[in-house]
Length: 335
Image (cartoon, rainbow, N blue to C red):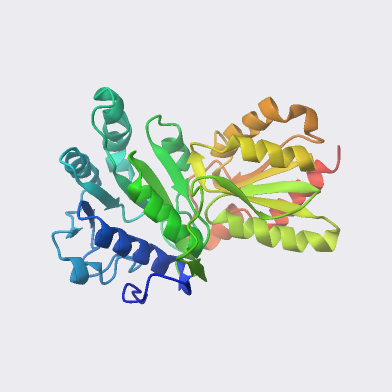
């Protein structure tokens, strides 16, 4: 992955998602001396996916810190740094490695602001590459968003394209609240245009990325691409499918989602984690509360199965596919 921080920060560039994140981290390090990065192998190596490549050479090893192999320590020291006035950005190398830091995140980081009765802010960003489809072993392909979305005091956000990767990352680092920033690692090398002169107005809001009138597909992170592919394929079946990109899981932009579904009458939620007690259930419940009288059919969910993430040769049977999404669309038209 080629670093991009020598380019002029204006106009439009075509970058991979990984390059957009690299650029966002570099721009925040350059603009705010309190920002520092820490994580396993993020310094000289530039991280497993080279997302932090070149940043240690540019800003020094005291601001781009190679941390010991201990996720609990990475988050714990980030809490202390925030209390001391820094704005730390912690990288957890893979989704399945976050659990040793679970107590620090859920019991400590998310609670500190309330514990101090608002007198102390804890602007910690935790970058977490997540999701499957990379042909890897267990602990490298998980989608743990629901664990953290359930935690009050913690924002959970993600993105699906390079432009949003840049602006959502910058907004997360500048937030006064602790944020879990979920990065769709399967798409780190997917390229798209980044407009440095056009900030995202509300980077954590839900947005329509494809209009449609027959049904609403909604997804986040890596599954937005699946939803868009399904919408395109659905044209052959005569469907005009709307697609929503949910960038903020907590807080959740339920107003935009409900309004969209009221116009189509049908909703299909797509995510990689198990549908059992998954985040799609929260959205489905919200639609029942806010859009019940507009629904033409029960809300459908397409997601992973309730089982440990499978070996790589089977993962494409586990992950949502275009065919499974269109089967769910068909199901909504049987009512």
